[in-house]
View 1 (cartoon, rainbow, N blue to C red):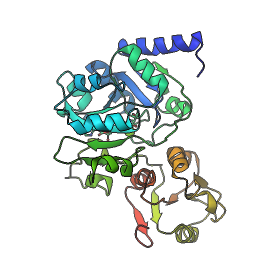
View 2 (cartoon, rainbow, N blue to C red):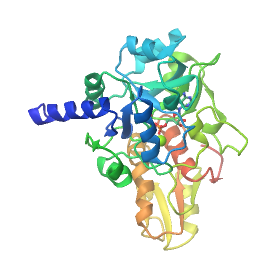
View 3 (tube, rainbow, N blue to C red):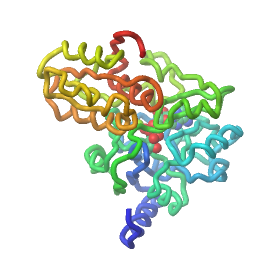
View 4 (tube, rainbow, N blue to C red):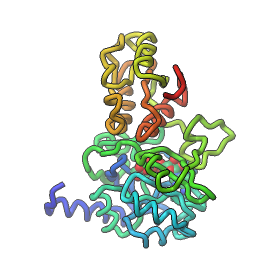
Length: 342
Ligand code: TXA
Ligand code: MG
């Protein structure tokens, strides 16, 4: 964005709205966030209201890339957290740490831990700096819908219920941050996301995976990230994910249904199906592109007349792990494995 006076006063206005307890949707590199002052319980309560979000689902707080902010809001910070911040912030990595009591219960859903990250977006970093507050921000979608990667989608979902949207263009990463819990004896992955697990493991060693990252939780199970238990990202029509070699999954999907079947596929296979209701994730081997598109592809089916949706699925490596996870969550983990994971 150009450094004009108009731009500068927009940042001041957004920071002022945050300081006065209002809701402002903000761009990040992952997805748009619905921001409020993380230290103001009433402002935070209005986030839950605007999204229709269950109150036991805690929020991530967004801070500048500065060790002193980690120390202000977290307690018993392990050395590994500073090392991860040094290596990967600003960026799509959220760390779960013991919270300092200054962070209100409303923000952490009553947990004694807090999710904290430094977003890699100059506009939002500047707004945090000017507001001089940590900003609590869930993804800016209505609860249960796919996350928003464009300002127009934020307006569609929560436009009437917030003070402002700061338009920072389309989100560069497209899936939410990777969440790592650092409060246990070994690091644990709570949500795969925009920071590939392999990069984190190169620094931390092996990272455990919370079962909620792999399968649907049953009613009695409690995932460590409360948000992972909710049905998510789901279009209105039921979704089935098909895993296996791309040619095989394309053939399988082509044999299912007909003109009212929706298909999510790789670019190479777009002409392969007996339906015009096809949405392209991106080229087969371009997971960066797939991550950027996955939520708008899922959203696109709410405007299409389809009674079921089949999806091809990338390999679970690099960003593919997050893309596959979002598709499988949209499918309620209804997955057909043609030959197991490739
Ligand atoms: O990329 C992102 O992380 C985006 C942008 C806006 O920063 N934010 C985001 O927030 O995805 P949200 O609220 O949609 O998802 C946060 C997830 C939820 O599943 C929540 O349960 C989990 O993080 N979470 C937050 N604080 C936690 C905590 N203290 N312990 C465990 N899980 C936590
Ligand atoms: Mg969300």
